Every structure is written in C-alpha cells, then in structure tokens.
Image (cartoon, rainbow, N blue to C red; front, side, top):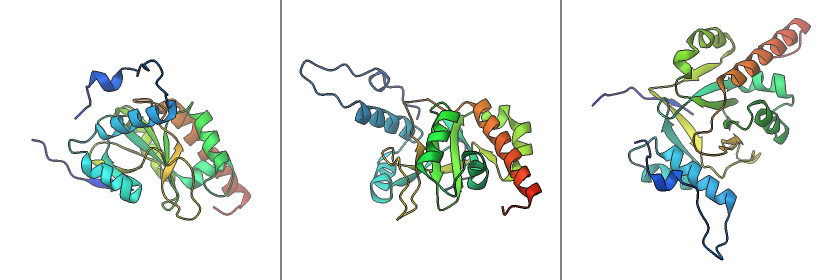
Length: 206
C-alpha cells in the first residue's frame, strides 16, 4: 500500500444509486436543494475510505480535511488577488456572485481567516498546468494536488459569517463532479495579476 505525506491546507463512490437521479413517488414532496447537497456531500466524502469521522467533524466544527488529487485538486488564490478583480475589502456576497459568474458555477471555498480562496479544479490540473503554476507562485497562487489535504466546509455553509469568519462555500458545489474550468481560473489569475501590478505602479497599499 502506497504511503503518502500529508500536507494540510486549511474509495471512489461507484454506487449507481447515488449517480442516478431521484425519481419522486406519487405524492412525494421533493426538496431539490437538499437533494443536491446530499449528493454533493456523498461525492466529497467518496474521497475517503472512512467517512464517519469526517461527518462528525462537519457537524462539530463545520469543516473537515479531505485529500486532494483523487477526485479533484484545488487552486489556492490569495484574497488580495481575488479582491483586486472582484472589488471590495473582504469576503462578500458581491465577490461570491462575481466568482460564480467567472467560473460559471464552478465550486469555490473561501477561508476568511486565512485570507484565501480555493477553486476546485480537475485532479489533473497540477500536472497539465505545471508551467503556469510555477509562474503563479510569485503572487502566492498554487495548485494543490496529491499528498495535500484541504479544509472543506460542510455543504450547507454557503454564506460569510462575520461573527466567526468560518470557512464557507463562496460558490457552492452545484452537483457531483462539477468543477471550475482551468482556463477560467487562469484568466482570473491573469486579471488579478494585472490589477495588482497597476495598484503597485500607482503606489496604492497592497
């Protein structure tokens, strides 16, 4: 069995029952949002062999660590770079809406305490975009894959809480296996780099 080093950042489920759309029985009241969230939870937890502990952490703390590089990877985006494009001074509904449009609904996690965003991307991105990733590191952007664990919020935490600054889904996971397109993420990074360069040239504070 291959051993892996664990770097913390902040069994594939093959059941046909999970992948198959739910068909309501006559007279059955459906809750589409709850169904999507349940499906998303199952998909996220399919990265683990033992899932009970992760569920308990979600209930107790609102976040659990999930391994990257299997079903998905994550691009770490500093808040400064994101806000250079979205505007504002911190996490907000407006920034969340902008990211949702920019990534066409691809999922994004916001870590307000760490001042970072994480765009969930295909698992292959750290390898296929390695040259770009090397260039992005100068602005504290990185693509996290195998041997890395990411703090993932419970699927129903979808708004910024100013009291706790807890991690939340800036853009909720819309459905199983729906991820941000690497090109869309690259475009936002390029736009952020451009805006930050202009701010530095103007002498504005970082």
